[in-house]
Image (cartoon, rainbow, N blue to C red):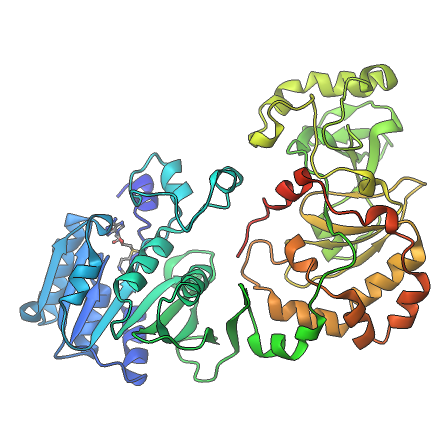
Length: 509
Ligand SMILES: C[S@@+](CC[C@H](N)C(=O)[O-])C[C@H]1O[C@@H](n2cnc3c(N)ncnc32)[C@H](O)[C@@H]1O
C-alpha cells in the first residue's frame, strides 16, 4: 500500500492483542452480543477477537479494500469462525446503515476502528474517500476557510452510526482519537442521539499504532437518552475512573464534578482578552540579536532596519517557561488592522527596503485574510498591542501560566499569535490580575474546563468566561484588585469584527 493510500484510507490496522484486550473489557462489562458488526474491518483483528470473546455471535464485517476482505475471511477461517461470519467489500459512505442495522435482531455490538484521517488530509493527497456532503455539522464558508470545518472521517462515520442506531439498543465500541470521541458524544447529547451510558478508556496510540495522538476506546450504549456525562479511565485495565467529562450548557468540560464545584467562577470577564500579532512571515518579521549586536532574520540574513517599527517579542514557549526577557524582535508594520503601510517608505527607508526585498514571501502567505490588504499587513494588532503592561499566557501549553510583562527599554513587548493577553496602562493592576489568574482557585477552574489533548487548550473564548471578581474573592485578592481597578479602561472596548474573526481561527477541541 502506498503512503498516499494509507493516508487516504486512514489505514492503521489494530494489533490482534489490542483487539483481544478490548473484547475482554466488553465481556467484563457484561456486553451481550448476538451479532458483532465491524463496519471497516480491515484484515479482521476485531472480528477474530470477537469470535473468541463471543463464541455464539454472528460476525459481520465490511471494508473498502478487497485484499483486506480476503485476508479477514482467511483469518476467520483459521479461527474456526468461518461458518458464522460474513465479510464483504463495501464503501462505508455508499450504504444506508440505518436500514442495515435495523434488520439485525438481538444484542448488537458495533465494534472496530474507523479510518484515522481528516477530510483535509484526504484532500491533501487528492483522495476521494470522503462523504458526499462535506458541509458537515452545519459549518459555513468562513469556518471552512479558517480550518474550523476540518473534521475526522471517523467522526463523520461514528455520527452516522449513532444516527443509524438512534432508539435501538446496541453497544458501540470503537477505537478513535479522544477528541473525536468527545465530539461524537457532544453531537449525540445535543441532538437527541440517545446515548444511555458511555465511557472512554485511554489507549497508548504511539505503542499500538505508532501514532502520536491521544486515543481511546469509546464505549456507548444506545437506545435511551442518559446523562450528558462520560467517565474517563486511564487505560483498558483501569477500573476506577480518572475524571468525568460532561456537557455544561453548550460546552464540554473536562471534569464536570470540579466544574460544578467551581462554576461560580464563571461569568463575563470584565476585560477583553486579545490574541498576539499574526503575520505568517516569521522568517522575515522575526529578528534576533547576534553576539556582535547586529540583527539577523530566520533566513540567516543580517538585517539593517530603523528602530521605529521594531518591538521586543515573546512567544508561547517563553511565557510557559517563564523566560520573560525577550531575545527576539518583531517588525510591526501597522498600528491597527487595515492601516496603510506606504508611510514606512518615507519614515523608515531601510525597513521598507528590507520588507520590499522579501515582498514575494509576503505575497505567498497562504491565509486568505491577507488578500486585498496593504503590503506587509498584519492581524491581531491595535492600540492594545502597544500597552506598556500586559498579562499574557500561552494558548498552546497545558498548564496556563499567566506572566506579568512590562516594557523593555521603554518599548512595549509584543506576543505572537500563539499567545493571549490583557493590556494595562498601570503595572499595579496588571500585577494583581496576574496574581488572580495564577491563584489555585483560577487554575483549578481552568483545568476543569480544558482538555489537555487539544491543540490549543487555552482560547480567547475560554479566558473570556473568567469572572475575575469571583476569582479574586475566592483567592482573597478582591480588595487589592478594587484598589487599582479601572485604570485599563482604554483597552477594554469590545474587539473589532476583524479581531473577532481572527480569534475564530483558533482550533477547537
Ligand atoms: C484504522 S483501519 C482499521 C481496520 C480495522 N477496523 C482494525 O481495527 O484493524 C481503517 C480501515 O478502514 C478502511 N476504510 C477506509 N475508508 C473506508 C470506506 N470508505 N469504507 C469502508 N472501509 C474503509 C480501511 O481500508 C482500513 O482497513
